Image (cartoon, rainbow, N blue to C red; front, side, top):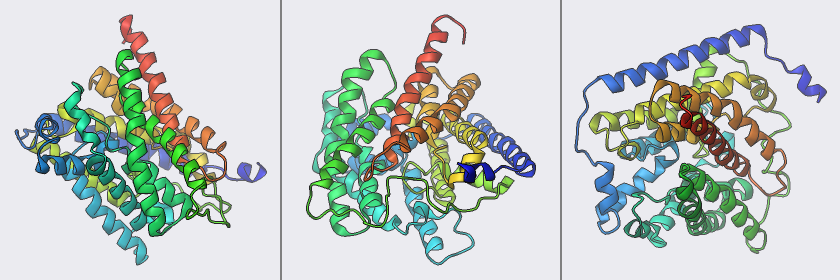
Length: 403
């Protein structure tokens, strides 16, 4: 504890962070204004068409598969998925050759990114193609199902806990692809829809419950061996990287938070994904974000959520070298916008409240996890809890005409 007291945010660093916060929000809302002002195209793979044909048509099923790669960000966009993968590879290559342009080391400097990418892609393949969970679309009026769950949860978690290797990749991919969807869909269909709560709560519940279940199963599989020299379930390292807060660091960190859900946490990969998402909007606003035409507001809320969390928890960034400020980016902010509309007050409410509450809850859970469990459990539990709390509070005030 005394060691933590020695690590402080200097006045210069605080000023830099405040300036970074202002710039981040200015950029986020400037892009929001451009997207809602400039003309856009129409009829380019609209979401409704993809969802209607994906069950029976091979081409549209593949489109769904690519879209699932950015479902965690509420984008479900083909260009965003493609650019995410391309720029993720570039980030990994830069990191591998120790380039000064590498940014934050992809997959936290573990060198596991290729294994993570293969595991999560195979897990998604199992969910969409092998288990054919997409068929549920034909039996529901929901117009969407959470086949993407393994891409951002169980398979990558298995790799981070057990390390690289094809046995670990295949085990995580197969179990993750099988387990994640049924839990998420049960919660969405049986609990959330009757209560009119956002589906993201079910998605992330499938992630944290499914990750616990699979990691516990792995304990009893003879070919799965925990590394003996480390405890991957703890995000706090003995020697965290020394961070100097600058305006540039702050802006890069906001960007990197956009691909934390994929276990990448790299600003280059995030730039590619965001570019693809914005391109999607201009090609056809109904292609991205489930044809809600709310992508600009979703994006702005994500910027607000990440930037708010980073500014508030600068000290913990310096102490730990990492802090779960990405939680509202893939949960609270977008959920509030999709539930209550894309007005500026809802953008700010979802982003700010998510940025305040989400990281703290995640960190609290992470610090209590037993050996062999990955921090994704704490992150996704926080997403579920914080989203339910914030949406319920806003709904209460909404019902009485106070917002």
